[in-house]
Length: 497
Figure 1: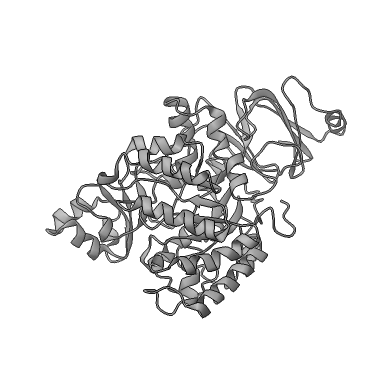
Figure 2 (figure 1 turned 120 degrees about the horizontal axis):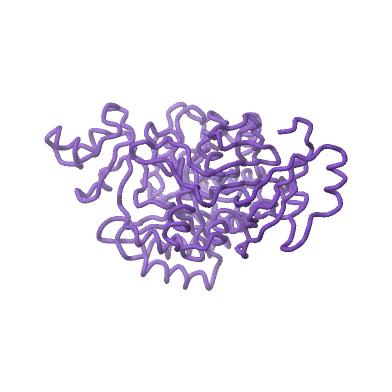
């Protein structure tokens, strides 16, 4: 690479611009931290390229046979603390991800300050609950200079833990007002909106009045509402209705987090849930995210253990030696039921093999779905989605199964994601947009992470730029550029870059 290059020309690549339209062969010019030009089909780049070449400031990269696409946007992460503590962000850069959305499932670092975060906040680790405001969190991200961009939701469960005296009841009027004030501060700092996780017991008691009181603040400021719904098992249909009602009464676009039909009794019910979501979407804006695996991952809960599905222990505080073993084997070793074994292993985390592949396929191919990893970077043995979700979609659901067109798959990772979450100037290969770009080999791109070896680099991701800085190369290493930043929503003050 030329040390003095002021511009980069990606030549003769297969351009897939993130908008869902058919790709074409052409060139993309990056100047500084922005995309300067994208050659339309059959056209050449403007005369400015000749001037740059004459000045000797163009690095030209032959992308023949490669796909040139916008950097992927991971809409569902728990990278809140990882972006500060492990700022190289290799698990995401190595997938082609250039922007992560944190604060999902009602779980965010701000505005909780504690040395001993309880579950489910503990999913974010323990060392970064230092930020009493979203502005303070944004400042910490920018000071850390992460390898990827970070956009944030404010977590409703975090708000409850800060302001609600007893988590077994709904917030009273004073507590709702305090949560709403924190929500306004977060929106002023550029947050994307509110997330909730009424699935978790710490937020389960929240009622519609409480959720709407906080979500309405996000609505007035142009935000979104992402929710881990109350029940993904037998009660999934009323849980979807509740989420839609909350968003509708608040005036917010709704994003259903990691949509799934969990548990053997629920398998096949995407034939019911997806038509319901489509019906609801005729009256309000709704999207959803999905990860390309049949196993989920969260805190260890005995009520999710049914003796039928496999449960892989990814970490246990009282019994760390059991990490990486299946719960059924542990229960046999101890001579107890699986539920009793789960209780003994708590607090801990686990992967639950609770979905069926045909349901996953229906959600991934649905026109309202986006791709999110939902990875847990602080797990001792993380779910492989942390390192492999995006290449897995390309390898399995596009190239191998043919369930998506390449342009559809990339749209679900880029343009749709930016639009749903109000992230400006990203998600498309478009002149003037930020130069978040990935170049990958369509014949080789593939996830390497497995449940047995979850921290494996994906194949076929050749080059990744973040804000115009080359940040990852096919050698499997971050370049050290660390050009990411805290990204504010498009409707907030100063929302550029």
